[in-house]
Image (cartoon, rainbow, N blue to C red; front, side, top):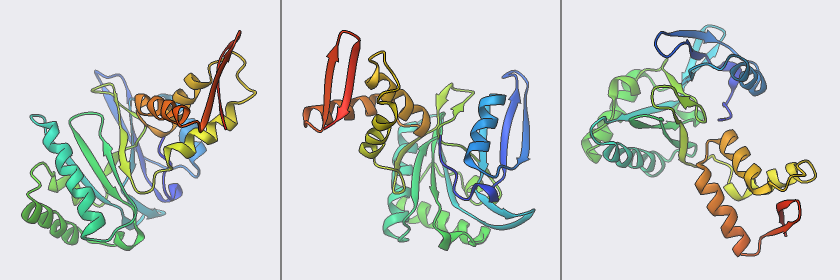
Amino acid sequence: MEKIKEIEKREFGFFVGSRENPIMVRKKRFSTQEDLESFIRTHNPLDCFVSVAYYDGDEWIGADLFFDLDSKENITLARADAETVYEVLLDDFGLKEVTMNFSGSKGYHVIATDEVIRELTTRDRREICDYLIGKYKVETLDTKASIDVKRLRRIEGTINSKSGKLCKAIKSTTATPLDDLIYKHIAEIEGVDKRGRYVYLLVKIISENYGIDANTIQQRIEKLIRENKLILYTDETGEYVRRR
């Protein structure tokens, strides 16, 4: 699951109940990532959201830049537009902390968390949207959602209950490199699992914790093995993988 930046300053919202009659619960607060994840495991909400805004108590003190790109008719176009927004934030605006997520449904989110943009007003954000639409012909941008400084967005690594699909990162300047995650979790599971399922466990842990596609992880592990950076071996109890 996504590690929420400055979690103690955020508002959280959840759809609970049944899919036929979901109820939105808002204004939840958590002091730590562990508290958030424990709440989700215990209550198993239908959908999980975090504010783009930061708060000091009840006082709004800033917000991330958030762009919502949706198209029921042409999700390929929505992705292309999201790619454009991602690159423009890096190249034209010089931002450093930018992430592009698949929403789990009909679109994509692009989020910038650089501190320098937190105090941008609704008017400032509208001007950025107008710039993206006017100069770069971004067609699928939901301007109303993207200028809302108190909006809740879906948490990366959680399920969209309507589609059953995962909200996941497509690309990010702040993401931990996949190789580092693989090496980290190899160290964690060595000596713990005795059933010879190291590759399976690596894929499962990284996919569930970081919202990375399981096939992408599997393919990267296989490439590291081919490059002789990981060692794959088997014995009578199963399959194991270790860092060389």
